[in-house]
Amino acid sequence: MEATQAAHRAGTLQQFYRRGLLHFDGLPWRGELWLEDGLRLGPPSEQDESALLGPGYIVVDAQVAGIDWSDALSHLTSFFGRPLSS
Image (cartoon, rainbow, N blue to C red; front, side):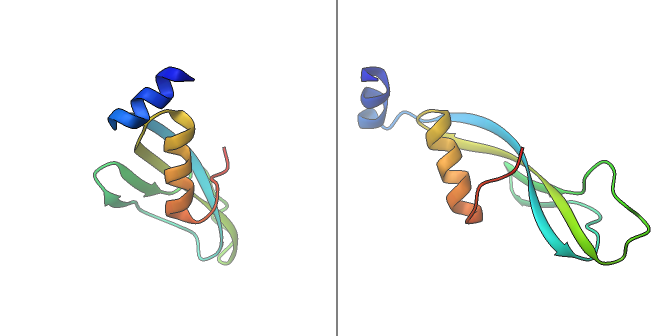
């Protein structure tokens, strides 16, 4: 706990990798989109090609800076406005 508080006071940040899924309803997602150097949106490896509309998932790969894992996760959650599914 003291190490985390000291890192917070010093402003020491680490990079954390997180992969998750965002749920959406609409047309199937194809291709990929890089929002930043460390933030990529892409299609799942498998998806129902017969359904034109309906529920789907977007894979999110992110490098997030934070003091610790939970701090980085809270930054990513606030960016998307909701937590990612695993």
